[in-house]
Image 1: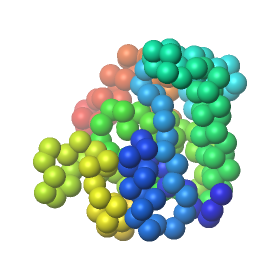
Image 2 (image 1 turned 180 degrees about the horizontal axis):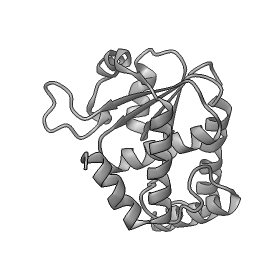
Image 3 (image 1 turned 90 degrees about the vertical axis):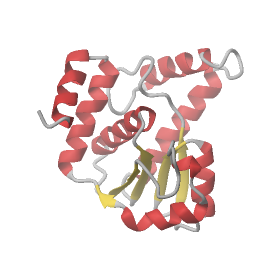
Length: 185
């Protein structure tokens, strides 16, 4: 593992990040975290990973088996654990898919006591309408966003952990409460 890890959703955006000339490794996080079994929240134990792998494999119509998905999930978490002491840059956009993933990663990194976590979050890009996500951007456009990264603060780690817990437990009351916070109520 190099001294920095960039994490994003999906292989397309990850390939563009690799081509952007940024220092460090790139990890494409692959999981639909707002659906399926997710207990406990935060860093998953072996039983949670096995349940998750079975759920994800079942959604592929037989294209992937649970053992393969489990190996992939374990590999992702291993890379995350190895990177936690080093700088990590999270690259995400504003969709539910990315936001649930971002919350989960921040909850996991909080449990690993990560201190050097930065975030690049994009909800639009000049000249791209409609904007659907980072995968629409070229490598040079992504490289240009690098200077916009912000350090994740302790309050954001706590909030992300609350969001991750609400998703993992499918706690509608907690999700409603989080919506009220986001709306400034």
